[in-house]
Length: 270
Image 1 (spheres, one colour):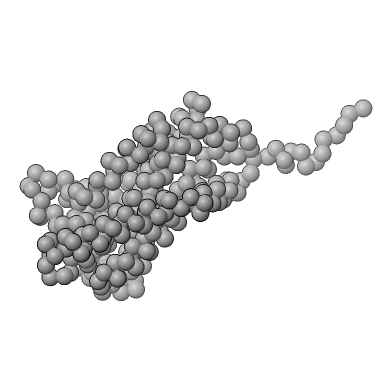
Image 2 (tube, rainbow, N blue to C red; image 1 turned 90 degrees about the vertical axis):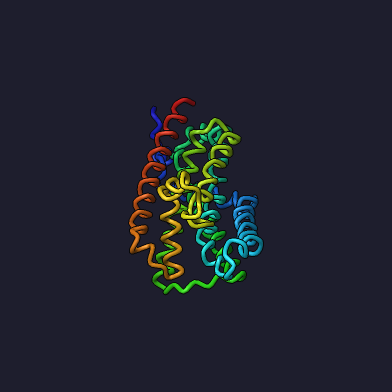
């Protein structure tokens, strides 16, 4: 006598949809953020301290007319995004080395969705941190004259940049040998805003360094945000906006492909 399988048995073994899996891992990462808010606190505190340092301590020496805060805020915003996203490299490296990916692969789950969870949770954290940093900027004298449409464009560009830099740090975390290496490689990327127009004009730099600052990805992104918020025409007339969008599209494509290939290679060796 044979026993018929329950009609629900195949459903129990069926892999959940990608949307369901992604939402599960996003919830996991957000819950981790709530339970251990250190990454969010550091993502807020470090840029705020740097803003106070550059505006209240160095600002008078760099630009004595009191308007330096309007110049430096766009660079601080991107620095905030970088600090917040750098923790993703360590989190992803931890997941890749502590065996949890192997456990996920034994379940009817898409283990690669763990990367999506980290990226989306980091995006949420960084948007919150960016809002706090902008609030502090207003408190220390930031007075943009952007229209509502320009604000939307500037914040949209910031959000897309956060997504790009987060995916890039996720790829670094996958490709690294462990959390310590991921933190070290991520620290190198944190220097990029300093060699750009974030804090001083490119024309004030030595002649040998000026081409590097002019042609690196962050300078057109910063100049576009600065032009949108302060009413400058450099974002449009200088072609910086198109250059910024081009860099963002290129880096995002490279980061997504690198993330997918690196994850497949690491998971395949396990």
